[in-house]
Image 1 (cartoon, one colour):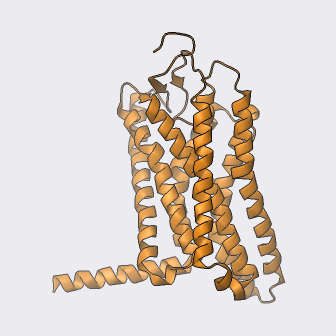
Image 2 (image 1 turned 180 degrees about the vertical axis):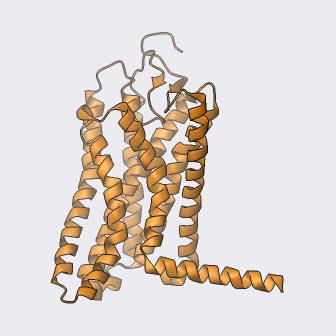
Image 3 (image 1 turned 90 degrees about the vertical axis):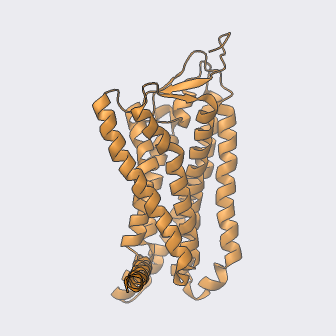
Length: 317
């Protein structure tokens, strides 16, 4: 691959989940179906929000961004994973590996910050409902979404640059399903303490800081809900946050477990399963969580299906 100990890699080999051919074919079918559900579910959510004027609110504006991030994140990992299930030579070119790390890392950071922005939206909705429209105006929502995208992208550029400047020597085997940050850093044949510090700092900025903001928001939200006199009022107030809170628990939990302490990170198998969780399961579940637990979304689905049914009936007649 190169001429000296600090080799320029042209490609890496991803070891993936299994070397058994039958298992790989079975996993290909399962993950393909999950990926198709993920793409379809998130694109339908985006389309539904665009078509139904009742969903043109700050909460659904952020949900559109979340769905876009989810489908993009899944697409940055899953197609390559599916191709490698069927390929004999499971190589990924150096530049493709760098691009995959950049997009998956960036989109992950965007999602964490975006969830904090959504928590603030729920905080205003529950704790200051009379001023909700004045506070959460279109300009503020756009700026908040922009902060999410820009902060995640900047972090991704920095992490990708310092990671792929590391000399890999002759290490070409990545024991992972994708070019994940910790898996690539482990290939380096030099001291990686600087990278570990950078990972820790970015984890604090893009993971723990948004998580603390979410935590503070929900402390205020729960405190406000408990002060509501009527049982029905408390139920409605909690219902407005239930979907977002479910997604928060799913997204932040494993990320904190994986990235906040690189020295005591989980096993390689656990890392692979966590990556699958973020690349396939979470993006697939998010549209379901918001659809099944949200009256406005269910009402919009019913309206859209009714319109499609009426249109179909007219075509038949």
